[in-house]
Length: 372
Image 1 (cartoon, rainbow, N blue to C red):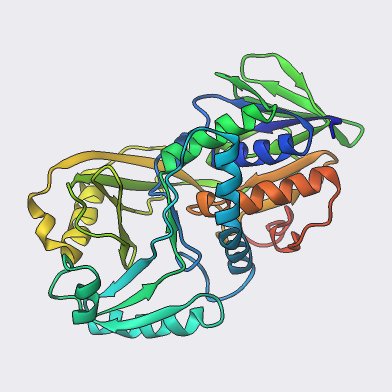
Image 2 (image 1 turned 90 degrees about the vertical axis):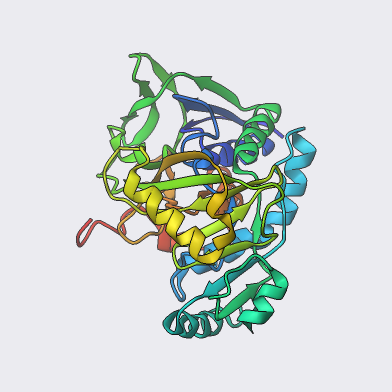
């Protein structure tokens, strides 16, 4: 069943493409404006982890959103595979969180308590951890085994969502970027592009990642800022580990092609997606503390991406204080994890369906008071 309303999405990353796919599947007239390659930017720069137990607060609205999206992932991937020939290589293999110090071991116990009632976390000693992953350092004292943890090929996911959205009827206008939201009489009428032309729309979805705050014509400033994450890949055939392995902020993710992806830093340096000597050193030190046998592994690649952060690390999802304007941005380092639920929630808002999750915690005016 088609819908005559014109939906324009500013940004074609994993969030913009997920929204476009779901909206087009529901019969909406969808156009995506993307300055580069859809599904690239922060999507390409990630490690493809789908981890509801990583980078979260102990409780609160982010956990609710993360768990809802995580639990919908297998069915979402199944639908995606039916809509595109691009396989995102979805792997529900779990992860290990390892401890090399007494303090880190104590933190594992806290982690297990935090996750009680959400996901299963089993604590094992160092020897048991090495039975699961023999390449782990002899210095590993303990580990948390997390079965409820997925990963996929983030590059292929971006391509799959782009293709699925296009096959569902979404139109992609590439080489363009949204400069400003145009409104009249208190509601959206379209956008102006950097090239000087305009596009009419009944609904505009801001999904431009860390560039979202630079769009003019918004009803109030949008506090989304770039947070650089540096990454590297080691050439390892076969991969030394089967599961993803985390230690603190460092994670190691094996790929089916033999690469071992290592991430990530968190750098507040503005719009500078450039790897640095210090950042790569930090990643290598962290990786070798966990897998010392990788000391002679060739460095295949280094890169960096810009993730859309917000002051409270919660995304902005839902209606803006301008009729027809919708936020879908600020997902920080969780864009891939939150893609399924964001696509669903934004399509619900556009079509007037009551969502299964309240959007109140992610409303657009939560930064109106206090520091941004």
